[in-house]
Image (cartoon, rainbow, N blue to C red; front, side, top):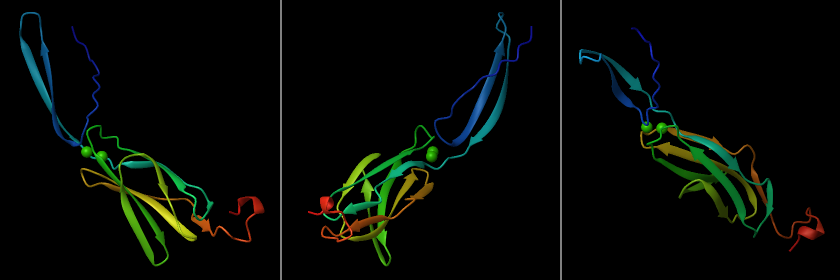
Length: 146
Ligand SMILES: [Ca+2]
Ligand SMILES: [Ca+2]
C-alpha cells in the first residue's frame, strides 16, 4: 500500500529545522527520511497608526497603534517617534493600543518603529501631519474656542 500524505506545520520561529519522516509497517519494519529547512524571520508589521488631523492645544491627542509579528514566539519592542522640522523625540510603548499625548501648537509628524527580537525593524509613518492649533485661534469656529 502506498500513500502520499501531505503534512502541514507552522514554525513558531525562524531557524534551521530538520523534518524526519518515519514509515513503519505493522511488523515493526521502518524506514526514515530527513529534510532540512531554513525558516526566515519576518519583520513585524504596524497594522494601525491612527491619529486626528487637527486638535486644539491643551486637549489630549489619542493615537491608536497596533502591530503584530507572524513569528509566534517573537517579542516586539515598539516606540513612537514625534517630530517637527529640526527636532523630535521618541518614547517606548508598553504594547499595542492607545497613547494619549499633549502637544504645543504646531505641526507634527508621527511614526511608529517596531523591532522584533531578531533585529528586524519596520517603520511606519503617519499618512498625514498632526496640526495643533492654539486654543484662541481665530480660524476656529466659536464653539471650539476655550
Ligand atoms: Ca523570529
Ligand atoms: Ca519576526
